[in-house]
Length: 191
Image (cartoon, rainbow, N blue to C red; front, side, top):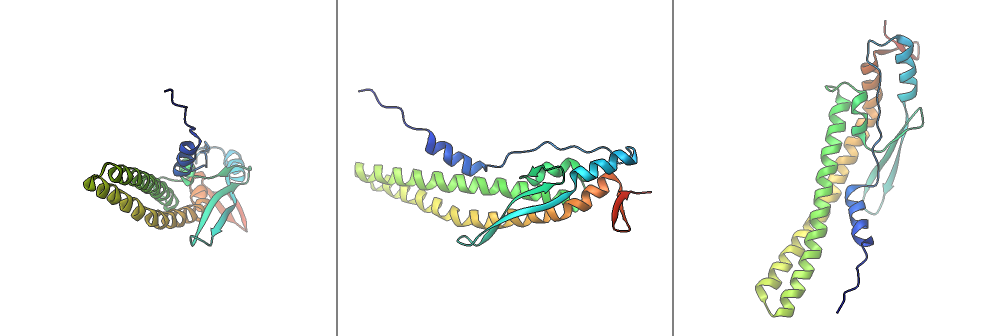
């Protein structure tokens, strides 16, 4: 008997959700010792305009969607801003925190999904074979997978807090990186 090929759409959908849908952007800025007009133009292009967020009332957290820069770039991953801020700045630390927490969240989501699906399959296979140890092992996997799911919400909250903090600290970090100062309500190259 020839088996029919199975659709890969459900698997790809799970992978997209686990990995996140936002793509990376490549950003660069001139050094702080570049001519003042070059730094001023870079700041004008790279300065933040606003960040967009969506509140998920069912799950009880706010998802930070992107930070929009003045040149129209939409930054969906805060770590993409790392080349634009000093590495020792609070903004850089928040960006690294958000990346690490998002990675942990993805691993928990993957572990929960694999645990639940693997647990159901193993439990049903064990029950079908009349093997209680296999069936109980499957239930154990299922329970482990279910436990991972609320942990993903906690990690999502931490990720969103770090992302919001990174976006709020970005302008100060960008100014430091480019050697820009505020004078009379305007941002100009430092003297």
